[in-house]
Length: 225
Image (tube, rainbow, N blue to C red):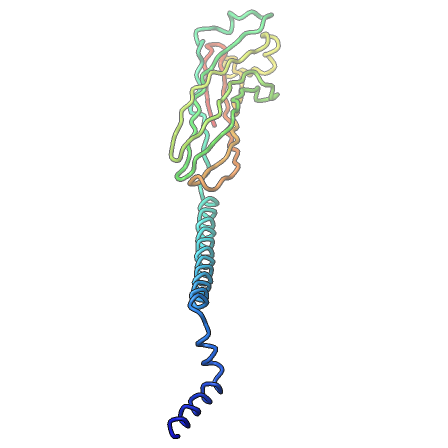
């Protein structure tokens, strides 16, 4: 009788605890599915955190590069010299009624600063009358790239075509009994600056110099930039 009573009490307790009965009814497949779903949620949250960290780091790097770009030096273009090719000619031997030509070689130096490369487009070097601005000669500059800390020398031939003596006379000035023609050379380059191949910036650089051309000896004097 006592044993039957104990069994009935145990049965009553188990029946009065539905949670324990429900726990015994969960299958192994359901438990595995629950664990796998939790793992997927953890992976998704980790991927989100990693992606956010990577994004913040990239923005920080871009900000640093932008600050460096704003403080970078610009490329420099310079006229170093200009010399005449046909210096043996004499102004007095040129016909007063026919035009005459002169060719000069202008040395142009292009320098790019540290950490910056410069992709420039094709352009020209022009020579003009200083007073009137009329163009008398042009030389082409090919498109190219100047890498960081690179210096490029370019010798450009500028073929200048002048009018007759009578047309040129208003632009000539007498200086120590010599016929001096005041000219101005001009160069302009437009292109893109690159910093570490990541950031780009449009840039235009230019330079202008004066050339005093002596027609008594066909030599250039007082080359100034």
